[in-house]
Length: 273
Image (cartoon, rainbow, N blue to C red; front, top):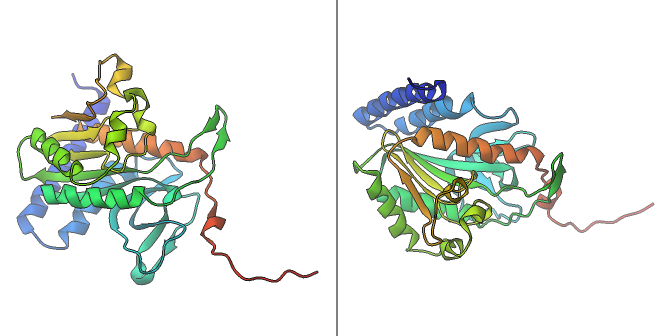
């Protein structure tokens, strides 16, 4: 007999699979927004902490210029205790220090989609990002880095192993700081600031992640993980693992404080009595 937890995600999986089939049948540009909204509604809107909201738009850093290239992100999980901006054309702008994770959503995954999402991940994870450490009831905590994920309703291949090979190929095309990740003990990798996608999740097919997720490495569960093994893949559980990842990453934002004054540029001022 299945657990309540498993049955819950089985039901979500069935609804998302049906929505993905409808989107593929019509192949219309408006379906991009539809599948993104359905994903957010089914997976995130009602199952994240109260201080965490789901949006879409662009992520900015404190030194960003008007002409600097930015990525339009499908799903952004952010700390709603802090403001966001609304730019030209109604695009929402999120301060990088308030973001726990960001997700690209695709109808049918291709290798090019992973490459594009990996480039966006590197750009955003490379932003200036130095919020202060704060105390919580258990002591000093580090502000979490944003995690980057890609979710797809389907894929051009039938096997998650091929997706894993795509990710390895793309990771070798640029410097995503994965060599240093290999040199980091598996038990400490979740704190390591790599620049690559943290995980790719394909509905009904499984997932591939770096061994640097916000929860503990398999090594902490007694699995012997050699240092040069940094990829984890499975043919099942894609929704459950993604749900856990975004919620654990978001939970760490509870104790975060953002220095919004860092976004205010220096001015020539006069002080008088």
